[in-house]
Length: 100
Image 1 (cartoon, rainbow, N blue to C red):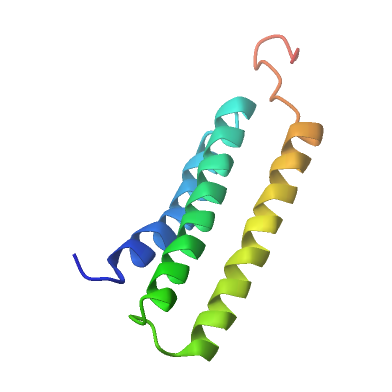
Image 2 (tube, rainbow, N blue to C red):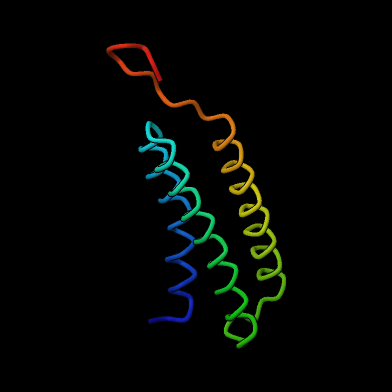
């Protein structure tokens, strides 16, 4: 596997897991579960960027610093969204009864 392969895989997973969770938004717990997985992949991407930088496989320090910071910000945003969903996401009402 190429050294950057893990970065590509984990970074692509961030978005894919948000989309998959949103598709399951009807079930609050599933939605949150996929958001948590997405945040974990985001944090994994940061770790892989760190490894690449530390081993000198990624030599562009400006690129590394910029992207590491962006993933740190993204992780915090996902965390805030998880908190918002936990506190504010309403379960969809039952189609037959209108009850939640």
